[in-house]
Amino acid sequence: MAHRCGAKKRDGGRCGKTVKVKGKKCKFHGGASTGPKTEEGKRKSAKNSLKHGIYSRYWTDEERVIAEGEIGRLQDLTQEILSAEIELSRIEALLEARRTDVRAGMELSNIDTAEGEEGGTTRQHFSMPNLRDLKNTYLGRVSNLKRMHQEMTTEDVHLEMSQRTEEYKDAVLGRIRSLTRRANEE
Image (cartoon, rainbow, N blue to C red; front, top):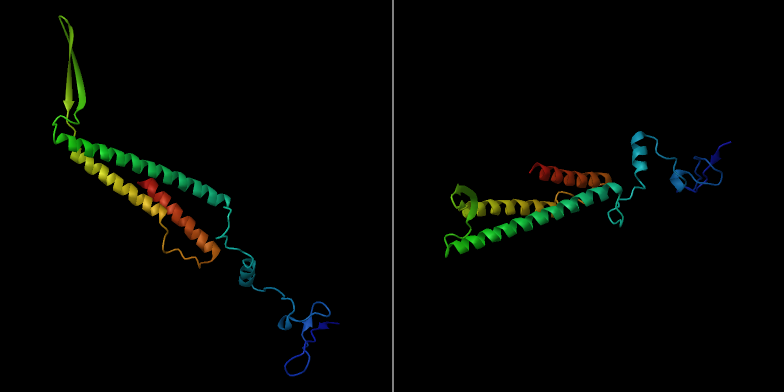
């Protein structure tokens, strides 16, 4: 014999739906759900307990590997920017010094040695590098490095926090991979 719900309905009668356990109510009157029946419903139900993890203090192993790589790349990039800016300041100092001394910034390019009666003679050859071209090269390099740094440190405005967890995580990881790929290509 099937057990019946027995809950009082609005019209005063009793509910006649069957229940699994005697003394319990049907799903319409507060009883347990019988669970999803379709594949789509089962997939949705499987994600019900999924937490987004946005506020988690702990990183997954995959996030930790990505973060360590990004932090390392960011430090390398910062070091490269600093080195290029130091070179640029040296070039500017040489350009300033050339205004008063035309030999400032000369580089030793070649040494000739000639054998003679009293031992040998040595001649040194100097060249004058084109500091303006060098300055333009370093200005472009610093500009490119700073642009890359800014891309790595600013958040993408297209990523919305309201997206489902898996979609959000995929979008963030995709953004990091694309930045990494772009940096490797340059």
